Image (cartoon, rainbow over all chains, first blue to last red; front, side):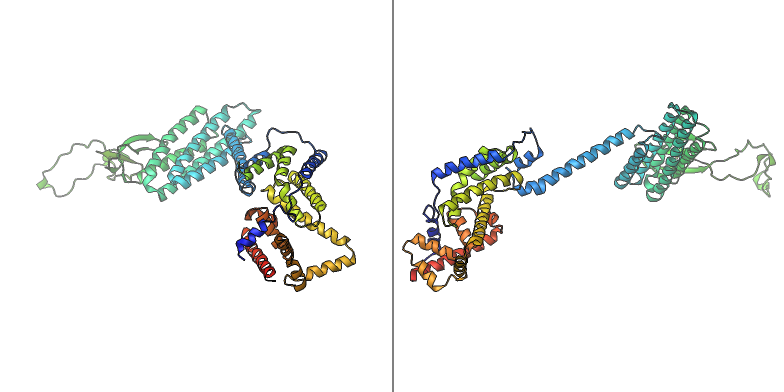
Length: 322
Length: 190
């Protein structure tokens, strides 16, 4: 006997008395009884237009049910939670952008800025994050202006907010200064570009502070900004070979300096650093000149000409020779 | 439309709308197979009818309570199988001591037990011989042969009904067929 014969003999049982088909009458009567029992024992539930349960059941029509409940449903829940969290975060951040020192959402604004800096630093490096920090300095200055102009319950409350805003400004300037030092050490090739951006913005910041009428309480901040400008200049002059440049004079509280600003052409030129003579020499007094061949010793320097010493190069001027 | 997709659509209607009419359609599809499956295991027609009705009622309640139902055919056969097991357990508690002793003797006899086997295999009708040979086999083998060759379910469906892997089902099916073949060959030679 073959296996196929065995299988055939089993199949032949179908419909015999051993595996008999049910009576048609019994099938019909049993069906009616079953439906009656279902009607009696099943509560009618109100039909809902949509339910997530319907969605899972419907998805089970086109993919394995285990996949629906083990993969699709958890993934859907994760996406929904992530979307809600992201949307909530974005809403909070956008609402905090207009906040000022002393507002509830102001820490959120600062935290967002820290995050931005961290991301930019990781993606583009120190130079880009320093520029971003500098834009935050501008923000702090705007905040100072707004806090000064904003109505307050009392003068003391306003002063407190202004002090906080100025303190934030000082902290931000300090941070930019530190960042600039980092750039000098780690990315000397990009320090000129960063210094240029800093110099431009510091001018605008100083003007903004003057427009805001901030004087006494922000003196330290103004000094810090001026120092920042000096840092920037120092950063730019430390690079003796640079791209094609123009010169722009900058006046600060103590000295006159010339900052090298790269032009888009980027043609390499030589930058000559010359010391500045603090006391310019007056026109020499005409003196009888002895014939060379008769001169035994050098003539004495007239006392009205001052010391015969060229001063140290601080501050310096940088002139571009094309 | 394939029967699998049709079943899934009916299940969707039952689970989302408690549609009794959809369940009636499933009943029409599966009642004959379930009845055959049960009647092969029980001794009387009345018992088979009662257990069949009970199986469909339980399946309805199960569908309302649980949504984790991949295949209605697997569910209804599993319920039917468990009902038959429960049926025999309850009967065992009710049988008299004499009947129990007789039953125990039958259960303890091996497939190769001479007297009873020869007596069974001497049946005059081939179908009866097959049925009697199957009754000598393990219940698991009997179920698997019944589901595969009489109800013509797939290995996957049988695996779900018996709660085993498909590979295990294939192995069991092979062994069950070989066992039945050996029994029938012994019957022929005797």
